[in-house]
Picture 1 (tube, one colour):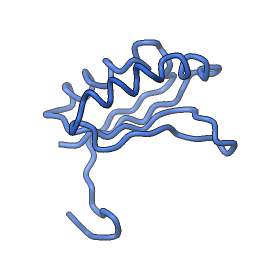
Picture 2 (cartoon, rainbow, N blue to C red; picture 1 turned 90 degrees about the horizontal axis):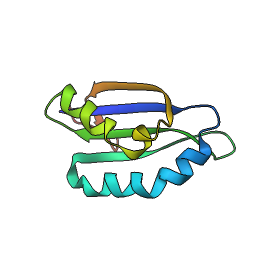
Picture 3 (cartoon, one colour; picture 1 turned 180 degrees about the horizontal axis):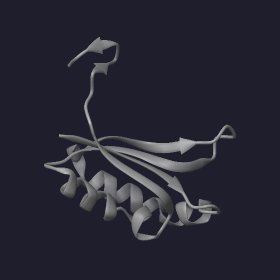
Length: 97
């Protein structure tokens, strides 16, 4: 099952984000095919202010455990976090479900 994390950074979190980014990327890369897609939320000026990560996980508890192990989460970057089950309905313009 797919799960989506939507997280918004704490005020002034850019320096934490920059410092933890190499470990964050290594964590996601090490997860291999567990990761469906991931990337930052961007402000109008292009600066990151949050994250979106979609993973494959057995259940919500496993998804939350994965997200909590992310170096961004471990460094306390996020002010607001939402984790929800996620289903793809349209993929590249094609109805899939």
